[in-house]
Amino acid sequence: MATRWLTDEERVAWVRLAAVLELLPGVLDGQLRRDDGLSHFEYFVLAMLSEAPDRTLRMTALAARTNATLPRLSHVVKRLEDRGLVRRFPCPEDGRATNAQLTGEGWDAVVAAAPGHVENVRASVLDALDPEQVGQLAAITGAILGRLDPDGVVLSPQRDTGSGRPAEG
Image 1: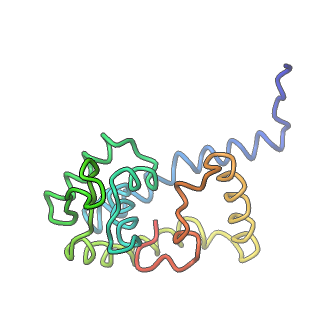
Image 2 (image 1 turned 90 degrees about the vertical axis):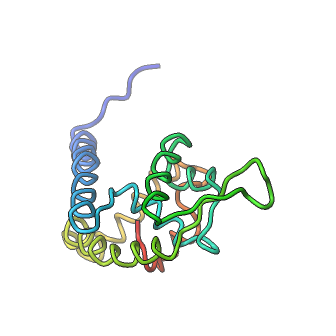
């Protein structure tokens, strides 16, 4: 099969997307570390738990929603647990599984971090776009996610409703 090389327009789009993918994590991480003492991934874990029923998820489900390996997630949840933000306990339905639950302190932390994080997301991404472009970005990222995550594991249903309060990832 012959290589389908990128057109000039496709190459520009790809290079710009790649640059955003490289720069944005540092921007998000830096603000959260500076203002709230959390990495972006730690905040994302807390946000996923904050949006779950009873603020609880099986570790395997949390790993899927955060696109993390279980070892990486376990390490991060241990750090959050040591800070009193999360607790782990055996799953009542399956004793072989472990649940992670957001504590009251964890809820307070994610609620406190959310306004600064959302403002950073606005300043770094959304304020650069007009309303039509925001809709286009949603459509474009939805199409890409359809290819990368066809089962919709990472984008859990409640995260695509627009409510996302108090914590948006």
